[in-house]
Image (cartoon, rainbow, N blue to C red):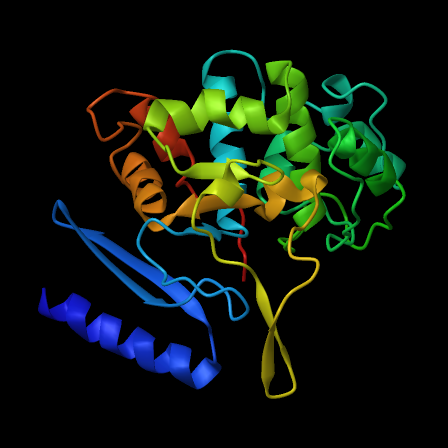
Length: 273
């Protein structure tokens, strides 16, 4: 379509201007999928980017974590308004008020109020999330609980840990069972997954002055998978988008999540300013 060709041309110019090594572009409209790819996967070990190249999708992953928790609420396994201390054994935060009253809903709406940009690497073991949540307990509170929207990455570490406990398995295994497999996302992964290195994947890059280099380390650490660690192809990312736009129905027509549950995620709950 004409509009997609114009978009592809504009993206190509922006990538050149910003010195981005490679990218994938996808559009789904009126039942039709349009795909384009640009550049290479790595400046050091270049392969052409294709629509099947894997990219780390960053904080789009947060919407997946939230979707899985809403699924569990729909199945009667979670009350989004219940205090987290009733759901996570030994849960606490620096502020006693937050320890007593923080809910899953407040985490998913970024209204917890503590300093949310806490990042640390707790290794690749199955205990990484549990250890991360224990460390978050000492992060200072900045605003009153529930009073304001303030983007909070570490809240989704807690949300991911809750998902592990409710599902009785690792975050990654729970996401594959609840979301990836039912939707049909066959090129979707989390680090560490050695399947990734058997596929074509784009590595992270960063700028050093005018020079663009491969990022090392690139992975964000296993404890951050539910915050921003999803690794998907553009085809799978569009399939995930269609699932939401189709109110819980996958590409094969199967209802994975009720329309009411999906629509509940679209209702504004807080003024983000």
